[in-house]
Image (cartoon, rainbow, N blue to C red; front, side):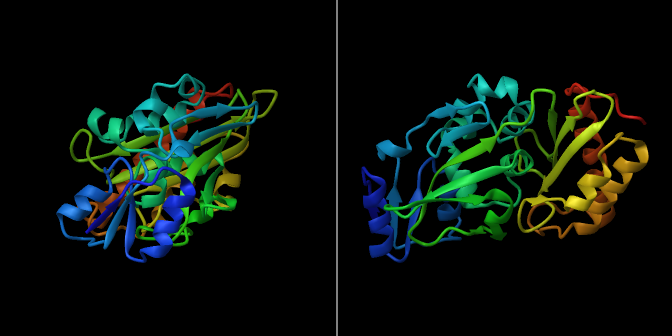
Length: 290
């Protein structure tokens, strides 16, 4: 296996074009387990950790938070912006353990597209763009359409994720991520992210976003019609219907857990209620009517 350490994005992209069987590696939290298990056998590894353009940074505006690809989960978790975005904080805290968060990178996780990742559902709720380059031109892709299938995304073979751009919700919004794992720090066997935005009068909700992981080949944002049904007052019936919609859309991946179907469905129902009620509590809106 050949190993390269380019120092620019263009050089990395050129290597990917010249080496059709090459794979990108950064923190190694995704690639190394696959290599050890023999699940992937790339002809070459392109280590992008020396690429200056991708080094860890967070750039904020009034409406967006732009995170560079090589920022680690722990660095983002410790950044001041997570205090303003509780859903983001929850999803980062749910990732593995300190060792994993200190090595795993934001760009690597998004590009890897593991269906049980905790981070993507939060990004889907915020409305996030994935920033991509081929070494010459940059483009953005809505993260809700970025994931295609198991470990398969809209990235072309020679393209690299250079960062993500998260859309800031209004200050009155609240968010939460609820996860079930068999062991502390383990992979999600179910995970639900919720972001709720109260109306300006604070007596109801004008926007609700829901997404989940570990229940399908890709992280999934729930259908818009389901989210629309949750606006107004977050009632017991509305939350139950949202949980029903998630359960009906599940296409559980066999290697995430070995619970029976009814147990998986029960877990997703519980997590949907927990995520929505916690998100509401963290918002400037009314309490959930249970």
